[in-house]
Length: 141
Image (cartoon, rainbow, N blue to C red; front, side, top):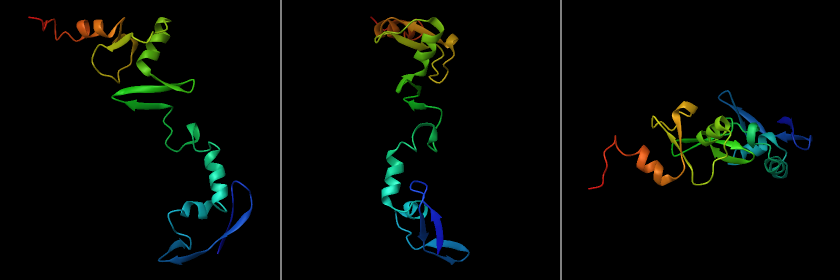
């Protein structure tokens, strides 16, 4: 038997174990084994889980507040996610973008968010007509 200290309530608790083939096996090896090895019980585990202990920078999969959706990189700004290319354009121009305005990636690479690679369009329609006109070819007959 091993004695451990619960990181939440600081109480000591026993963990039943045995050694088989050089590995320590715990008597409570179920789907909830992480609770039985680290915490004195479910109550302390849930207290830690609900406290936000594993969120944000403390999470083991934290990647700097960036997520990927449809090839675009989103960055966490003031508790909200914002497209990184729009944020970079706003910071470099000092202009707050309105809802319908479009920032186009000149080289077509959605991950290339350098300011030199970004172009502003006032509407989505203008963006489609100018940026995606297929090398100057007009589809109208």
